[in-house]
Length: 175
Image 1 (tube, one colour):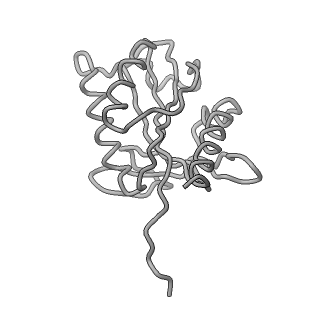
Image 2 (image 1 turned 180 degrees about the vertical axis):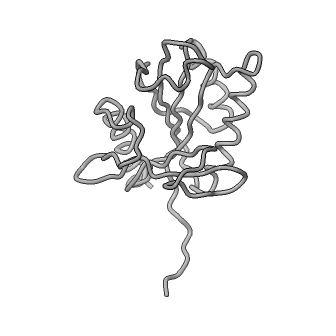
């Protein structure tokens, strides 16, 4: 029989989608107050992997990733998702989101994303929030899985996430 142990802290990341890239800067102010100092900001990337958000949010959309200096316990990720959902609602106009905020975390072995949508490969956490392993760390880099979103399969995204993981691993080594 195994012994239950407290999990290692993880690196909080947030992926954002918006038509107006000025929203990224505005929402980052809220993030810093809520989650602490941002230690990584990706460049603004084009997002053309799906039209899922087009009707609600417009077109063309842009993507940006941020990560945070302060490590968190993975048990808090559903609470963080609920908080980011409230940020989305606060930014909405006429009940239409102007920004999509997807939190997750990086550990030494995986990228976890959280969502309100259930599916066969997702595990229920609590309060209507599900988690999935989106990328797996193998052979020196993140690797996609069968269900990985098309944008997260790209070398561009994985290079960003690999860089964030490297930063996380350095944090762990430094204590």
